[in-house]
Length: 63
Length: 293
Image (cartoon, helix red, strand yellow):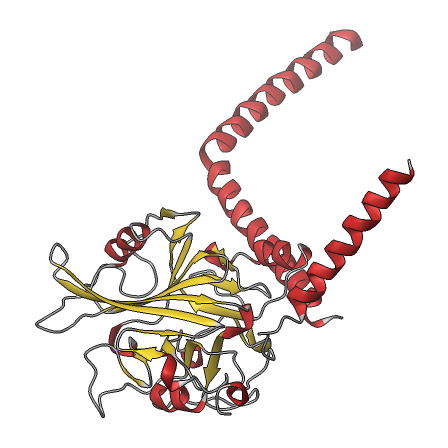
């Protein structure tokens, strides 16, 4: 086996692993991310509300 | 060009004058915990009050379809400062006691119970005084501004409150109970789990804005053989039939009460008042010195 053949083999293995990783990521995205996304959205909304509340109190009371 | 400049200057002066009058009109009362002027006894009728500054028409309606008796006070004021609130205590400390005592002390012509703010959280102002500044996303808020206009804030959204202030308004009175029953003249759909007895047939107290400086106080009587009360959705649908722009629910149940001419306008009797923290009322802005001569 030449050096070039070994490089080809390694590249092939890496491609297969990449494909598997991509598939796994897609599955996780489809199944788990919506929950994470809603959590994230809720957290973002809460943070936005807090920020708005802070701005509101500043407007009402000054610094 | 000179004409244009003259016209522009004239408009500017007229605008400035208009604003000045609005801020210091002849019927304006202080935005503070001071009472209204003593109403002129000669201006009362059995079902109303009429002086230069205030017009009140009382109405008692039987709604057979709801099995309810409803008390209505149709109000027109000359100054937004005549729509007022009062509470037991002071800016630092508040307590609960008979609402009738507030009615008499503050010279109210018509009054209803408020939101019982001593038991609530939220953005709570009374006559320009901040009594509490906290979040209450489970409730709708109502802001009343310097012009006496109602601003319903759904879910007490702080962003909406910021927008209100950035539009140049001032919170004169604000309530934390709700829900908003009517918005832009349309009945709202009230969610079944609104935080306080949405589905129960209960007494309700509602304040509404009909038009500029024109208001309606409503008490839906309930928990009696004569009157069953309404669910929140029934109350919202009913309020929309009255032609109001905005209607907001205040504390209900045993707290619901309406006074006219210092007496109960509803089925209350002496000694039956629930102790509450506050009232919403309207008063005369005519100086008694003018009619006591």
